[in-house]
Length: 163
Image 1 (cartoon, helix red, strand yellow):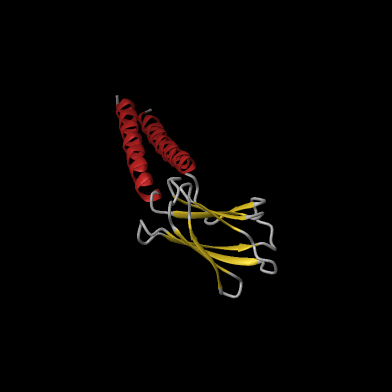
Image 2: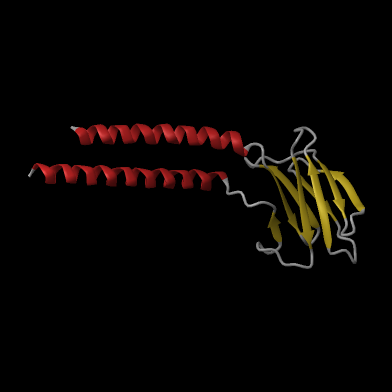
């Protein structure tokens, strides 16, 4: 009878944890701003944590000496393109989401270095939403395994003492 109570309690905790995890992930991920670039024609892609594009954001591009090179706005897909200038290997790009005050991101684009992703690089190291959900389930499964191992150990000691 006690084992059934432990299993029911464990299932209820799992459901409650999953509900809390999904609520907290959706609230937190909506406020992060990312910048992605491509090197051929330098393409900036700005998007929020949930994956929605950062439309009509102000983009300011500075050269490696800190001089203003170019200004513009992102399009409907959150993209902004500009041609690289001869002799300049590094740009600092600032994206400011004017419709969402406080959302600002910067990226340094170095044309002389190969990025980890090949021709495209991503600023920031945030995991995608689906990976965070899977990681959360893995964490909960680990906790459940530890709780069940502890319960089994306790029951084993109890039955050994009764003999």
